[in-house]
Length: 108
Image (cartoon, rainbow, N blue to C red; front, side, top):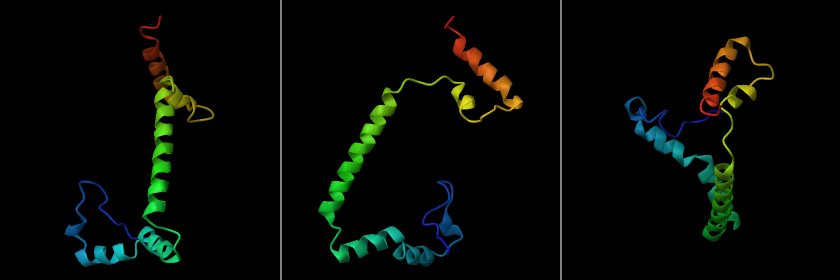
């Protein structure tokens, strides 16, 4: 299976410089989410009302997750090392120690 990239690699990329315009237009016609939507509409199980309901529910779920995140107390700077490895490699110990010292400044 070949998957087509529907947009530029980055904001600095301009695929039109190296890719024929008609190719991108062709590929958008085969885009799987659009195809699935049309299929579900033909089955009669998808319409604007269903979509609005799902979007409203999803927005509420995202809002709740954002609220919970914003209410979470900040983690110590050293946590980026503490939870990345089971055993922190020795090469990272000086960096962790530096952050620990930065955290302790003003808390003594």
